[in-house]
Image 1 (tube, one colour):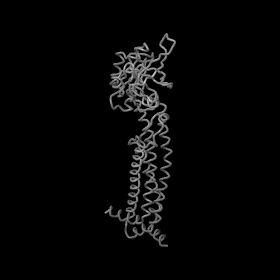
Image 2 (cartoon, one colour; image 1 turned 135 degrees about the vertical axis):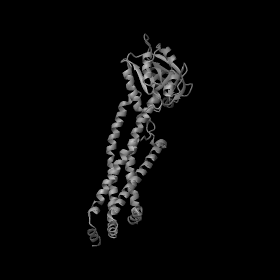
Image 3 (cartoon, helix red, strand yellow; image 1 turned 60 degrees about the vertical axis):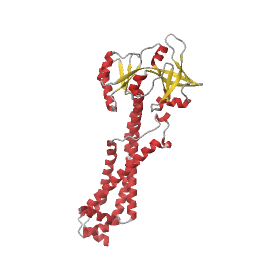
Image 4 (cartoon, one colour; image 1 turned 30 degrees about the vertical axis):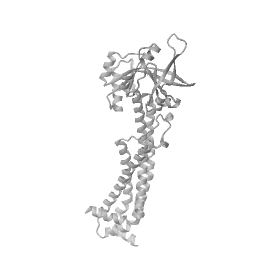
Length: 393
């Protein structure tokens, strides 16, 4: 019976095509305002996830260094790593260098790695031979490097030498990290070969990998456990520690922008209010007539609540479609590709949690409920006799 009453009221109040058009534009405007906020939040979270994911692919979950510089992971440290859930680690001999090729020079970060253990930690297929090098994809594209090309690496002089060390290597492949800075600066060589050239058999960096699928919060918790278990001479930090300032700035900006963009929702709420007021002005006469013939006023109010809920639900659904479309464009549209040398990432994607949807959709519901209450307040309190006299005067 209730559904029949609400259906009859819908036919009374939506008997004109322009009313339906006004409803459609109201829903789309409200949906667009919510989609803007969701896209902004998703971009910020997507940037953070992509940045941390790229760093984890190139550096594992955590970085281990020693206060004295060069080190070997001793049995006590190995036991502490196992207790913290480290499933694999790889020791790296790392050095800053200059790469020279056909008169061009660039500062790079040279890593001497052991292919098997490095792949177990980072999942990067990097296994250079004794005189070979695997270069980042960004550097290879910029310089047009191909397999077999020769690079000359200039390293700091060994102890007792006055001249820098010239290390010629042949390009054996490319590697993609997902971060422009890594792709344009990292070069990998065989660790044993680099150790021989530098006369330094020990490592100065270890990359750690926790159990597969470990979340960001889980990694940070395990890093804290390692700090407590290892002696003070060791230093362990999450892989994204070097970009901590950028990540913190992104979090602050996300909160600030989300609050500011609520102004867009407020403008859309005014459109909803204009639609409801227009509908009330047009149909006040019909309202008092149906009340005069015996329709309880609470039935009309129930119809109003259903209408407001439908506007909110449709706007949320349209906002989801808009967000999905924007995410698709981010992944495929060339004109939305950002300069990787400026923003660290060439591509962004939207990452949204259930709490993000709740933070946008629930305040929107509160706004609509408030607007609906103000709109029907006069009709709720006005007597039937007064309303009929006013409409037929």
